[in-house]
Length: 132
Image (cartoon, rainbow, N blue to C red; front, side):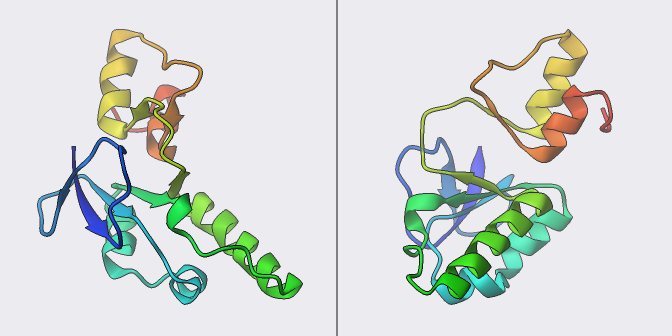
């Protein structure tokens, strides 16, 4: 699967990194504290709007701030991004299920492995609520 890479390249996520379209996903290999809190990465926002997978490589995130209020803001922003459909990963070698793979699995009556990571749209498809 082709992915637009923003930031440093994370190891072993299973994507072929590209610098221009077409791509099926956006991988954010690293983000600064400001980039995380403001989250104005245009390519990632556009990908989310188009229903594409957006992945944040967690080892590429800044360390948790020692300031409690700032740390709480970071945690809140991560929750908000997850609600948007952003997938956070540390690079563990789990099976990723995208919407396209979910459509194939749904049509074949298959279920994902228990340790699989599903994008939000893939979860909806496999639950029978998404477009097929």
